[in-house]
Length: 273
Image (cartoon, rainbow, N blue to C red; front, side, top):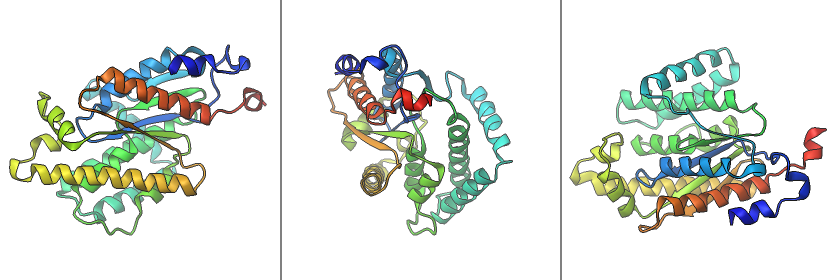
């Protein structure tokens, strides 16, 4: 499929990067479903596509934990001079606080993570002919807020905040999997980085059920907005079967990304003018 897409390009595109409005490819789904692996493989696949895309980068690169935190601070700090960024940060903070997070630590953590994402997107958005692949992004951030929140009634709507950040240049790739499979994969990992891994056995199943419901609600909400509004990004869903290899999943995700790039293609001549 990927080779067919490349072969089907108009001759005018063969020698230059595809002019596409897609700037960010964000993976979304349950913990353990394989977002990090799929995003890395898709980024590598995009780099091999030659004329289809320009520069392809993974968000945050290969920095270790400490250098990544320093880098995040260096991105966020300058944005405080921008009134729009401060306004978005206030809206996010209000949304998080009103959602009733489990603890103050949880609230501070998700506000910080979301502010970093917004600052990163704003700083990277002006780049031309660049696609940035994110293993977790804004939609996953809202999923985390809802998972830890006790209240759904807030004065802010999550999609209104998403729209204010700007999603017209984004492709959300939902890796959809059965909860039992995602749970089994996550529990086999050696780390304890996810809250889902640290859940007690008596609340484990309820937590996974809630996590899956939130995933479905967010994707359904995004689908509704895409159908009724222009310039709200694109959504692709890739089913992850229990026996599917990471390479198979990534290949299907890569096809979805390339199709989205072609759908949002701008003729080169128009772009040059």
